[in-house]
Image (cartoon, rainbow over all chains, first blue to last red; front, side):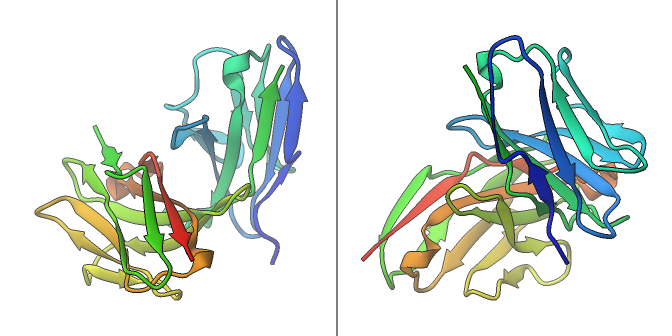
Length: 114
Length: 115
């Protein structure tokens, strides 16, 4: 049973470009969470999604950031017009239905904005 | 609002010595509590969790944590550490009543085990 998969593992973007981060949850998991780890900080919750629904986006920046989890395919975290402050590690986690407390994390995508 | 405080940013310790990583939380409702471990350049791995029942929870690799409701703490302990325990450890909390599973993390504690 493969774990949570994220790609790419490393992503370099110039200021103003778009970044797309992908997350494939574990088999049988229908809940996806995105967290961001800024340098010298802990992880901060960004968004919680179920298939085709955003359940909680209280941690998402108001502008430039969006997330989706379509019926088919991976969850996507999209950052438009990236700035240097977006440089961070972005982690995805997934959990089985109704078991929010069983979150399994992927290896993360490290975004560097130059 | 919920918050988690890990009182030590770095804990250096010699191999085979005991260690305690401290975690305090604040919440006005009942919570679930977690410890995660992150090895360099890797994702987080769940070390142990408290949901209900016995306040002492154990992991398979010798760590244990005790939920203390009166002190709102969930300290992580190991009686004898190994070099391989060197990693960053995160304490986290969630509110089961919120139905979102959102984890609130502490700042992390870097455990450095020296030979």
